[in-house]
Length: 346
Ligand SMILES: [Fe+2]
Image 1 (cartoon, rainbow, N blue to C red):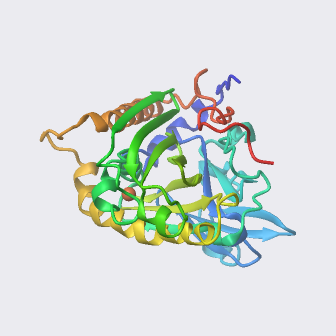
Image 2: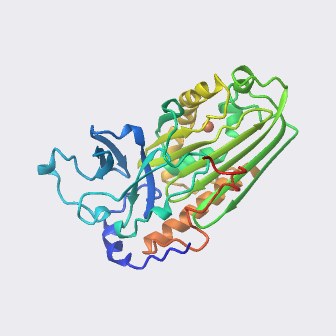
Image 3: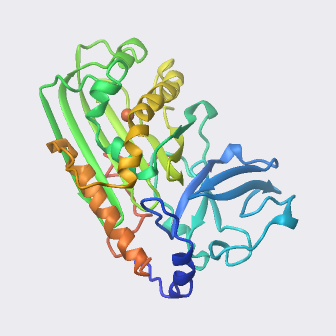
């Protein structure tokens, strides 16, 4: 699908004037702003790039507003993000409520990312949903996730162990809108969670981890597969709250996993998340304001370096007024094969 954005010039000037000083404030994209079951008749507030978004349901349909509906007197001026209406374009799919962040004239549900392991109607049990907050901007959080080697020392007790293996290969592919990182490890010691909770009896296992990152939205679609062992497909949307904060409403699909692994694995996010945060929080100021000091790189950092390059490129394009999607960058394209799945769920 080719997406032509022609009417974007109109709002470019408005966008420039309110550009948020996060490192990457990328626009014309869908953000999964909330777990769908968390949006009810009761009003909840979320934040994207320091902008409040109020969410609720009317007759079952989700609504997203720039203003609190019960405090409309002090609401102020609606922005270009809602064409002055105050209401964001909205979608509901895969168990998320999504809002379009950008020029509302260009909101198109065909641009929602494809997530082949989640049912489109979002019928996933609540215990497979988590919410983690990070004291770092979204892009740094994504870079941390791209660098899976950190798991060996940071999360080693639970899920690591890849450090001592027979082979360990990292490769990646990219388009103008996505980056796909593949890590293949053979002959690694079985991780503790797989042994204790997953019932894996062998001493060693192979590990294939595919991470598909949507650059504009920081939506990370992750498909780790352990052989012997259990697939742990999950989505981590790093929603940019502000310079020093991102929010991840994560969904696992562990319906094929045995009990008690199915119930316990999502809870591990509440242990792993703070470990990541411990490392990222002090890094964030340097990430927002890069100095001349050189980063040290290993061969495992190549996907992260490419990620930063692609993000800079998108950022510069948008600064110059070009918000279009290029021919190779359709976010809705079927990624079943990219994730190593045989067929989508349902
Ligand atoms: Fe981590």
